Structure formats: structure tokens, C-alpha cells
Image (cartoon, rainbow, N blue to C red; front, top):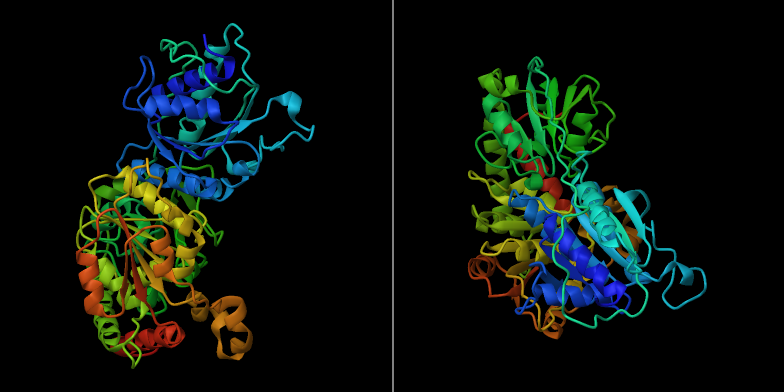
Amino acid sequence: MTAPAPHAARVLLQALAALGVRDVVLAPGSRSAPLAYALAAAAGSGRPEHAPDLRLHVRVDERVAGFLALGLARAAREEGTPRPVAVVTTSGTAVANLHPAVMEAHHAGLPLLLLTADRPHELRGTGANQTTEQSGIFGPAVRLALDVPAPTGRDGEDRDLRHLASRAVSAAMGARTADPGPVQIDLAFREPLTPDDDAWPAPDRAGLVEVRPAPVVVPELPVPEGPVVVVAGDGAGDRARTLAEAAGWPLLAEPSSGARSGAHALAAYRMLLDRPELGGRIRSVVLLGRPTLSRPVSALLARADVDLTVIAPTGADWPDAGRAADRVLADVPPTWLREATGDPAWLRDWQRADARAATALDAELSEAGPASARALPGPVVAAGVARATRPGDVLVLGSSNPIRDVDLVARWSDPVTVLANRGMAGIDGTVATAGGVALGLPGRRVRALLGDLTFLHDVGGLLHLDAEELPELQIVVMNDAGGSIFATLEHGAPERAEVFERIFGTAHRADLAGLCAGYRVPHRLVRTRAELTEALGRPAPGTSVVEVVVDRDDRRGLTERLSAAVRAVLGGESS
């Protein structure tokens, strides 16, 4: 039999594969070598007898590796077959670099298995190379943290390792808690770290545990009364659209909700909520998913005169930033899906206002743009990308302006797949996440829309190693040479102009084409609407970047003109 560390790595991978793991992301290092050798064998063309069938992805940057795993987990959930994705690191700072992806997975409820290699316990606290206190390093962001002693080859060790794997996968999937998320398995390995034979142990189910979730019981409750709307935040799923259409209620759905389609979905809802005849009349809200984009929606959910029902099927907590929820349910009561109680006139009022607002927005955007015609307004780019996204396509949205622009202008009659890292709503890891989504959904056209700072923050995600599969991914970068989202907030007010540019605008002159050339990624520069349409219609094979020059100087003014155009077409003054 091979040495204890390589043998334990093989047993662990066998167990994880038996428990549903299919994809493993590896960031190379020496202490994690037992897992690396086992993965190379399991994912190779000449897989040894008894080795599990796993798909291996290698990345040199642990932060990129973490977000790639996150994207693969998102893709699995989108397919309707959620399963954990494992990511392997060596010891030391390599582990800490996973933390941003772990935080996103924690808040987004995505099952990651963090297989962090470590020095054996006798070397900890001695100043040994690359040694730190890494067990439990992620604190409350993981569902479970396991500190596994270095294997010795003792009797029963394989069974115990399989049992540990069962607990880890169960916790990551939320099988007992309905609260999926990341799990850390800190694996101490002693030398020798290399296998001395190719013989894998025969598969054994001793120690593996079948964990079944508890049934969810949803009580029958009265249907909400009065003017009702459905708010669908990130990850709400098509349940929100089904409910809105069954009950006859308006649907206020964010792009990444999974519900932004159909006649009940309103594109310009955030510009309608301050209308007394619309938002002012709302008396009940049914919330699904986690809303993160709009201050008007946040204000609605915090109103004391609104009865708020939160549908939260997973997680120990529920979205309620305004601390105003009246009830929290695990699912929509069946009665609400059977009884069309909505007032048809209430729905028509919203639909008519939304249609008129859309016309006003289209008219304003058709004339928008600087006199030089050398740049495009952000919402125009977002509208072009939204139109190019068809059923079957996948759109990954970056934070800040891109997702908010799409939220304002996207109108889809048929369901489309839109994904975003809204667990933490940060710009970190977006390129790598999109790459993971593309690898996890082969055969589907995947496009990412993000800002220049988001792109630069994760430009290492473009690095493609020779032996690795290349994601089929078109990345559209809205390059306004800085952070224009702050211009639309209170920080961008004229009286703060003197300090705005340095601490919020963060102007730069980075050469995106040069960066892409360095990574050998095809790049195309776009300045006009026609060029954008052509680029979106003909994505380059493999991974490519479309850089769209976007106007930043007029961002605040454009936002104000769009709001004014909607107010003008609807008549009167909003409250």
C-alpha cells in the first residue's frame, strides 16, 4: 500500500465522488501534492482502476480558483442538479486567498468544499515554512470546519475519512439544515507526499452516510389583501413569476432573480415606486430572493403600512433589511397559486405605466451620447446586451452599473438565465466566476457584462494554462475609465466634485487591449451602437473580450434626464 498521505487522498476523492462531487479546482502547491497526484490520475485519460471519474480544473491563483469553483457551483444549481464543487489549496496564504469566494458562497448559499492542505499538528506553532493557524480561518462564513489529523494508516482510518466526507457534503448541501454553503476540510499531511504505486483501493461504502432532507410543510394561509406586488430579488427563481401570474399581481423582478420575463414583469419598476397612484397604493408585498439593487425597493420593503411576506426556502436567516417582515414562509402556500385574487385594473395600471416609461426611456437613450460619438451611454450598452441575450443563453452580470443598467432596460418575454454574485454584491472574482459558469454549462452561449474596474480587479481570471479547457465566454467590458456608479449616488453631488475624482472616480488609463494581448485573449474595441451589435452577434470562439468605450462624464446627468423623461410621460409629480 502507498504511503498514508497519498492513500488518504485517494480514499477521500473516492468518497467525495460517491457523494456527488464532479468538479475539483486545484491551485498547485507542495503540501497539497497527495490530492494533486490523485486528481491527476482521476481526471486523466488512462484512469486507474477504482479511481473516480472527476473533472479537474487547474488555476495558479487561489482567489481565481475559488471563484471558478463558485461559478461551477452556480452552473450546477442553474441546471437543476445542485452539487458541491471542491477547491484544493496548499497551506499558508494560499488558504486566505479563498476568503472572498467563501464569503460570496456563504451569503449566496452555494456548496463549496475547501480542501486546504496543512502541516501536521507537530509542526504548527514552530515557525515551520508556510505554517499558520488555518483551521477555522473562515470563521462564521463556513457551515462546518473540520481539522483532520495527518493520516497514519491505522485500522479504521479509511472508514472515518468516508464518514467525515459524508458530514462535510451534507453540511455543504444543507441536507439537514436547508442552509447550503461552504465547508472547510483542513487536511494535515506528513511526508512522503508522493505516491509510490498506481494501485487505488477498492471502493468501499463503509463510513458513507445517506442523508435525507426533512420534508417542508407549508401551511395554508389567507391570500394577501389589497394592492399586492411580488418582489423578486436575486435567486428568487421562476416561482416568483409563477406566483405573480397565477394570482394576477405585478412583478418587480431584478435581472438575476430568474423571474424577469413575461407580461407581469415590469422593467421600469424602480421609477414607478414613488408614484402615488402605483407604489403609494401598495399594501402587501410577497418577497422572494434577495433584493440588492434599488433604494426604492428597499424603502418599499421597510414601509410600516405594507404587509410583508418573505418566502425563504433555504438558509437559517431570511432577507429583511428593513426589519419589517410580518411572516416568513419556506414556500408559497398552495392556495396562493390556485386563486387569482389580484385586481385586473391594478395590474393594468402598472403595465400601462411601465410601457409608457419604457417608451420614454427608449426615446431618451436613442438621442443620448456625447457630441463626439466616440463613446456610448452605459444603459445603451446594457440594452444592446439584453437584446442579444436569448432563451438558452447565459448572462453573467458584474456589480455596480452594469446590473443596474440591465435592470432598467431589459425586457424579456421569454425566460433567460441571468446570474450575478449578489451574495456580497462585490466586484471581486467576476471574470473567474463567469469562466466557471461557462465551463459548467457547455453548449450554451455565455456572456459576461462588467465594468472596467471589475474587469481589472480580476484580470488574472483570463490566464489560460495550456493543459486546461478554455471557457467559451464573451466578456463585454463597459470601460468608462473609472468608478461611475458613485456619480449616481450622494458622493457625486456637485458640491463634492473637488474630492470625488480621486477617492471615488478613480480614473485610470489602463490599456485593456494590451492586457488581453498579454494573456493571448482576442480583444475588440467598440465605440458605436452598430459595432456593438455586430460584436454581440458574432462572438469569437473560446474566451474573448469586447471593450466598449462608455461615457462617464454624463452619467449623473443622464440618470437625472431618464428620471425626468419618465415623470414627463406619466404626468404630474411623483411623491
